[in-house]
Length: 379
Image (cartoon, rainbow, N blue to C red; front, side, top):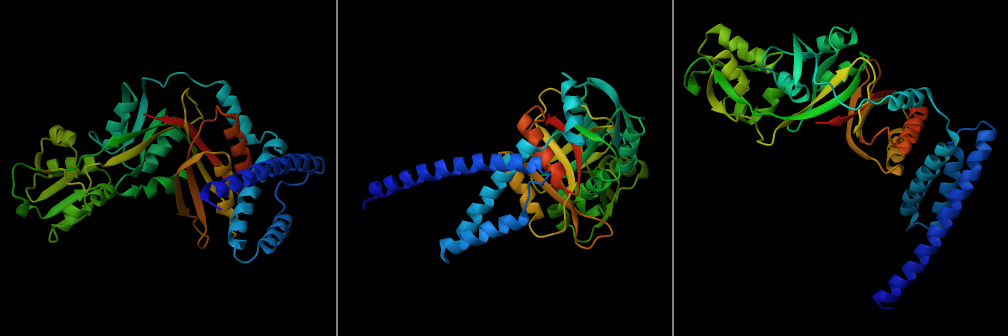
């Protein structure tokens, strides 16, 4: 047969497959009703294994792997459909829907905001992109920012979570589990690092370079070109610049910003020392209570799963079956548990969409623990 004749056969088979798939989903809906009446869970793992084994045996050795992949997808879709029919409101979904009903139209122009570091920090710059008239309070470390928001000292807090070159800010992710907060906004900030000194000196005169560990990582190639220079980690790039200015030393330099050079009267010995000119850091804006603003289209979640094969795959299958894009997946070890991890998900989706609410209900019932970190937009 020629190509067109073969494609005609495929079209006929596809029509039959579609009709059978729809018929199967309708039967799944009836099964969902029976499960609900008998208070049975959506997942019946033994039944899934039996069906999968029979299908693989029927398909033959050549096709058994493809059959396994096909039926795994069908199972995910079927369970998602049944969950949407069976699952009533959960405590989380009810809380979210209550806040959706009271969604705020505009993000505030002025507020008391906590930032880590001193004047001139990148967090301060991110804050000024989000708020027209912020009253900024500076704190020594990231945990103090969480604490200031949690206790109500500051209405909002600004924290870095990832960089396009150096990856995630793991310290912030590890602190998330210890504090109660919600993300209400995020912003991506272009980061341009410069080497700052007290007056004009030769690069060969610099014996020590100080900065935040993320900035040092973002400038690793430049630092490798200076093997005899001591590298010291500081809590913040702006703090490093301030220290250099106050030290009066000519043999020390800070990796920091142009703003800090102007602010602390430092000389830009070398500009653009970052590895990548397309260097961005993403900051989140957190607050104590759940607030949802119009136009919010990104969701962040923190969850832990049963420590068994396939648990993460099943969770990812739920997201895929609802057609949502998973734009970030971060894992962090759970202290005290060997090789068990807590996961952080960022999804492209909005809680104004009922299908997303259904997904969150499914995830809440499947996870050992799920924390909703917020639905927000990115500036």
